[in-house]
Length: 385
Image (tube, rainbow, N blue to C red; front, side, top):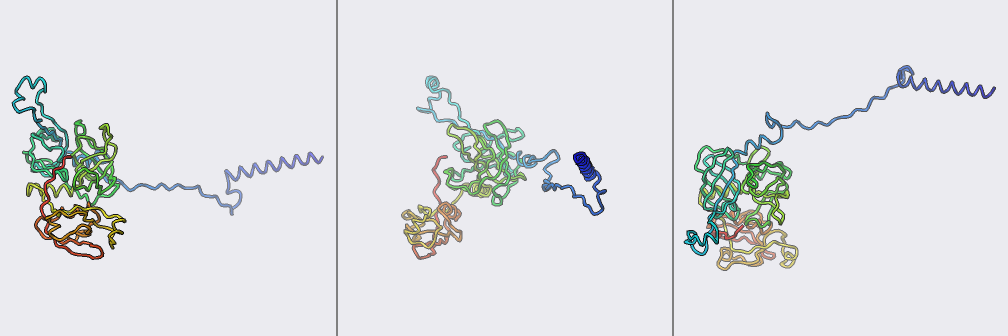
């Protein structure tokens, strides 16, 4: 009798619990006016800022590419090699049999038209020693180009095309660039034709690479390959911010490894203006051998400064020697411009106008001196790239 009663009680409890579960799931309001239904969790989606209108045809950087690409050209530079043992050998069939025909050597590169009058910028190493230069425009036209001037110390050259109303790129401001900004590289890699690649600014102010005397490179990971030299580096609006110059490559002569360098447009513009105005780039020169400071030098000379360029040597009868500079002096300012190291000293002195007096701030031991110097004209560079 007890067992039967327990079974009936168990079944009643089970049915009651099941009924309550069904009511709580389907009709929770029947369980009492004081009961509350928990709200369903919500998910907030964070929307990105509206992208700027790139073009009617699509998104990305097609508008920037269309704005700059017509001004980027391909350059074919030809150089007739010297014939040994004498000039007459080129006409001698016996010498032609052994040496082969005297065919000109050619090199491929790129350039950027920066003025509708036909002036364009490229690299010095693209056209160095060329006896003939031909330019192919983006629209397919081929024009002969004349070398206006060249500056090996920045690896820049200016060419002139005999045509008017040419497409010209808009010049940007390289000083406004920041690491992470999007840039496009436009040129003619490996001679395949005009190519646009995209990347970001990886670093600014790269120096001590051994590429040129005056270095202040923009580093980018936009793919740059042989043939891109002299081409355009443009920002996301299609404005020129640099001239592509060099890459890090494998020893076997491979292509881009994602590390490319471009000359800032501000440097290129100053070289362009100097070559058009004077035919050469005039730079100041002191005749000193500079060296970077390090903690050992600071301690050995008991210097109160930690930044500047140490004068390791002074050229006899040079501008610095005539002004009274001595080995061991540390130059901290040139014409009011701060000098942090030997590279900055080179840049600051180069900006001086030859023949015009400039003031140097010099640390000589514990003394701070102001020395007046008349810079000379920097001798032409004889370096080969």
